[in-house]
Image (tube, rainbow, N blue to C red; front, side, top):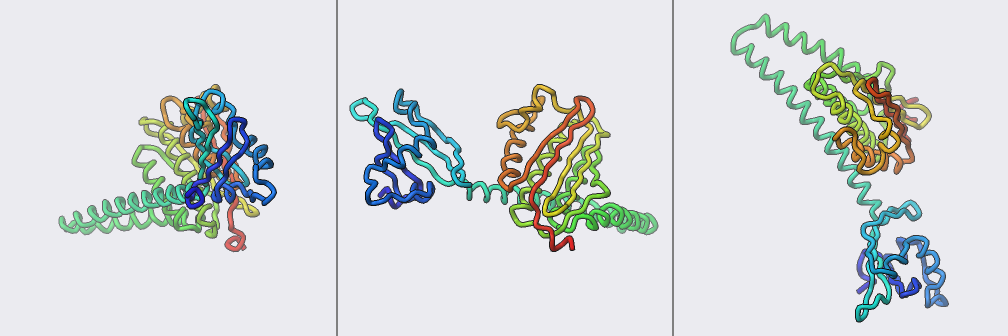
Length: 317
């Protein structure tokens, strides 16, 4: 039965010596038991470095949902004591590969953000259509002509310019939705005039970029608050296989006692969920081999710097 389940299972005795390991665990740990290794002695030492079962064996305290990375795999491990007549005689660890789940969640985050972009864009077009239909109904043809010309000019100036810099329609649509959202909240979101982005990022890269920008922009909008007039600037620059991103806002900044821990799980700024989101962003960015950093001057600005690998050589030639 143990060999048929997908979760890895490792059992140890009261001395911490491995007594059982199923096939799933062997594969996840990249371990193969030899015929001469019936007592799994070589694995016992390695396993003790992966999971500290001493506390479980000593006082029976379970270890729940520990995340451990082994050979680029993220494992979620639970360890519980095994008792016989009330006496702890060993412990069992069960674990599963969380890497694929994380990748799927990352892609889902990107798709959700993209869906939000499409929904907001559709809402904007419907509003314009209602204005046009209203002017037609009132037979206000001169006002209708002026409105259509103004709308077309605004599109060419704002959207046309953005599409010229951002070759990915997914990212472009996402940024347009965020520009509109910032405007609705009374703030300004601008794309730096020197920005440029090739359209050849992988699915993981695009999903990570959307998730990252989505979190950073929403955090900036939250930091700016309800008072209108705030400004957020976004810069995207591709160079030699790397995409460099900057998101800057002129909000209240991050308190000095929090900035060093801003990427820690559970850390928030002034009642917001900023730190929680940033912990996930940092995790996703680093999974791609990228990095994220922040600078902030309280009362003046906050600026995030992100770099991720980007498959853009073909588009940049």
